[in-house]
Image (cartoon, rainbow, N blue to C red; front, side, top):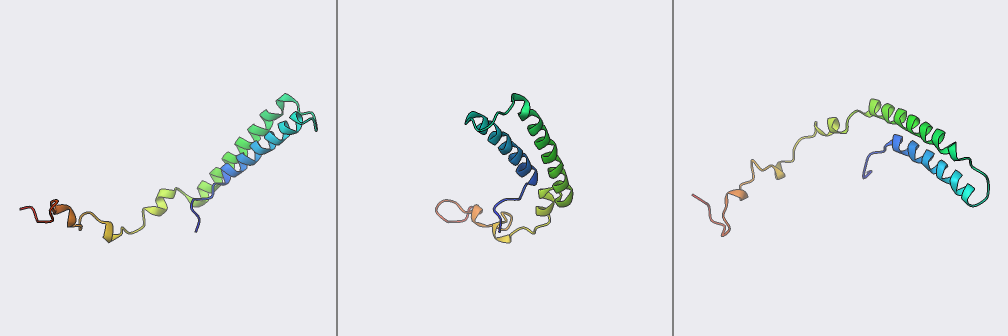
Amino acid sequence: MLRHEFHPGKLVLGLFLLIAAIAYAGDAGGIWDTPWFVAFPLLLAGLLLGGAAAAVSYGIRGRPTARTANRTSDRTTDRATDRTTDRSVDGSRDA
């Protein structure tokens, strides 16, 4: 079971940010020459494609609260049926 939901929009944006970081790291290391304006198209493309991926994912899966609203409540944690809150500190019933 997964600990959290998969968010493809964040993955796509992260990949484009990683590509921009690698491009500038290669420039700083002297491996190749990266112009200063390369980051703008990479980040813009990452934002647009990440937004599109998030929109498609939202369209397919819907809101996360819509899935959890249909779950039945657990009766063991329901405060309406819990009688322990009516007792005082010493354990006797309040009148």
